[in-house]
Image 1 (cartoon, rainbow, N blue to C red):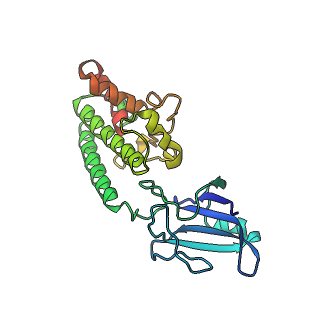
Image 2 (cartoon, helix red, strand yellow):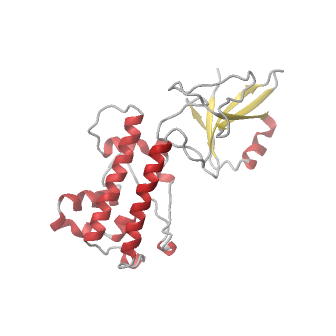
Image 3 (cartoon, rainbow, N blue to C red):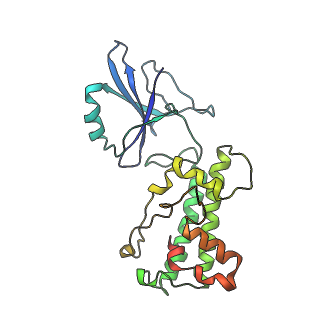
Amino acid sequence: MTTWHRALDAAGQYFTIALDYTDPAGTPMFAAYFPNILTREFIDADGGVSTDHTGAQVSLWREAYTLDQFDTWKRQRHIVEPLYASTAQPGRYFPRMHRGPEGPARDAEAYRTTVRVARSLSRRLTDIFQVVDPARAHADVFGHELRQLLILACTEVESAWQSVLRANAYPGDRWTTRDYVKLLAPMRLDHFAVRLVEAPAYGEIRPFRDWSAANPTASLPWYGAYNATKHNREAELNCATLDATAT
């Protein structure tokens, strides 16, 4: 029985790897499978076509080398994490969880809509930067425009969380951060980092770096700020800071 492993390269591409692969001649090898956006064919020794758990065809490339070439392959592929065991075979597809640098073909329309919304939010943040300079010294500045944008941005985050849970048949429909935090590990949200194009000196922003299942709301300060100012503007307007909104 094949034991599968996963690996991630520096570009964000995931590989599914079998270390106990053998070629038709019986030579011990390893095989690495990864998405192929050029064809719909599953490249394998028997020339067959694979399907994922939804019944859709899977498009994968396979690279196979002898085991003594494995370390060289990892260096050439810029593998940035240790391999870890996985129950997912090549082609296993989890809706709305994109892997790799190319655009997600299966969820293309949802992806395009999300990009449009993100650009709209970014434009509003840029407009605020005309009034409040995006400097760390102004991180605690708050106001009504920041509050409105914080609320809009966080409802989009909630919408994204819910879309992923719904697409993967997660039970229920009245979810909270105790449910949303279950996306942290499979989506590797704590790995994501961005910088403000308008103000790179503001530093790296990692919205989910400290997210914890033990305290799933309070461990996201920007989300806690959103909940506070959304429900009590008069008393909690000061929560709608530049830093919370930018994060």
